[in-house]
Image (cartoon, rainbow, N blue to C red; front, top):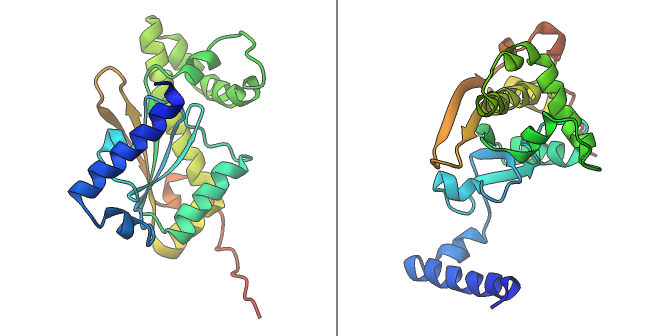
Amino acid sequence: MNIYNALLEGNKKWVAEKTKADPEFFERLSKGQSPQVLWIGCSDSRVPANEITGTNPGEVFVHRNIANMVVHSDMNMLSVLDYAVNILKVRHVIVCGHYGCGGVKAAMENAQNGLVDNWLRHIKDVYRIYSDELNAIEDPTDRVDRFTELNVIEQVFDLSKTSIIQNAWKDRNSPVIHGWVYSLKTGLIKDLGVSFDSQDSLPPIYRFDSLMPKVTTV
């Protein structure tokens, strides 16, 4: 069986298993979603958000891109963030990177890779910020691992700079933003211990003064 047909057969098997365990599963799922978590992760096929966290469909709202980046000009990411925060009203936003990330490794090199180089440049900016710390790490694997962690921390920080997050903090004191890293070797998630839940975590230059005025339709 080729991979295409295997996907369709796999879907049928999954539906049968879910229905056997819970006959009302799909009927209930079709009525709506109320996830409490937005996951911003890497597109790497080895890091599926639901599977590695043991959650079911409907419990985690997901956005994925190369190296789990928060780029302020990325309308895809911003649209997902806005919907998750202002419509779904998630309580937590998690940026999850992973050790052995190809995007992070590529950003540490000087080779040209094509169009993706424009994306990798944002990761290179993170290296520039922490270059003294990273260049002092002699072991190449340890250096990549630390860069992976620092990249996640910077993305958490970048999320906090957005008006979407800051307005939500002022409006309802939520969500809390966290930074995690997943290990492909062990399957375990490492909480980096960085979390932002208010403007107090930000340097004053990044803090917006007040909520955006709400538009009233007539």
